[in-house]
Length: 385
Image 1 (cartoon, helix red, strand yellow):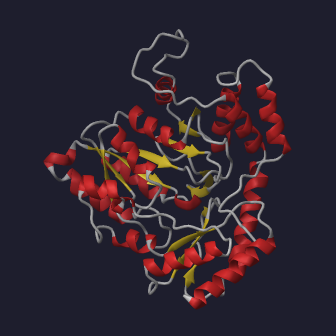
Image 2 (cartoon, one colour; image 1 turned 90 degrees about the horizontal axis):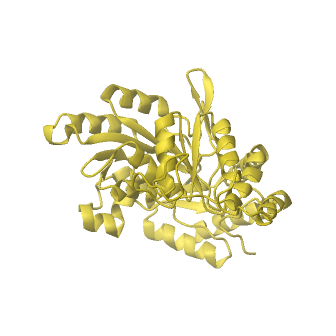
Image 3 (cartoon, one colour; image 1 turned 180 degrees about the horizontal axis):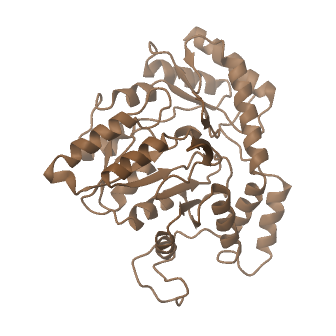
């Protein structure tokens, strides 16, 4: 049996929607983009959405529209997909990493505030610290109540990378509020393994009209809204998302409740199949949080090494189970080591987690017999490791 790491939930409705666009004259820059943006803004509960070519391009725009630039500092997590820190480097700013919480795997609030105080106490860095960029890791919302308090107290922007968390919710001031609605700007991503997909794509979300219009301009080669096709008022990029992508996204978003429920069902089946396995830790969920299941990541017990984990992954792959390490520590990636001098031991919780996590195959249309096959073989391989 071969079980892939992910599989997009695409039905005849999505195929029909894309084919409909293929029969029009506006494959790339028609009205469907704006319809998708409006649907996303309404679903998340924000005023503005600007569709982009990827989650990475949305992060780049988020940093730029906030005026973050050369020499500036942004506090963020080293446990994420690398785009959440690379986006600072695109504009000449520098990510300042702080360690993560060992349970939620999100950025550690105490470490954030400690680092903010440290940087603002030094004349050389006081004015350079501009923002906090937090990630809703694996679809689990960060502690946005605390992050918003810190940002407000110290006069910082807040960037929310909700690229893995479409549909996640956090109980905030007595109400359930969706991931993507907490930052001055936020982003979502729609690659093939996300909750919904546009093939490739992303979106910038904000309640600030000026930021939204600036993001729109920058993603469209620096054109002004309502301006001429060949009139460019600022430096911009080709970060546009096509109508074909957005037609797929609209069809997916119309099914979002069903898609999320299917993924929740798979997660529940995994938990039931694996909860009695000794020496692993299952995904953490606390009260007041509704995780949106992006991936199902288990963590080996502390006495397992990175070599043990990698050997286990290889043996599972040999049995047709496509799993992977999720995520490697960003600060220990070669580019970051070479550029900034990071070394092992700088962020011990992140490093410890990174060496023992395994993302199992996960998608909404997985069958129970596939999940049982994964669990059964995981147990067998673990016993032999």
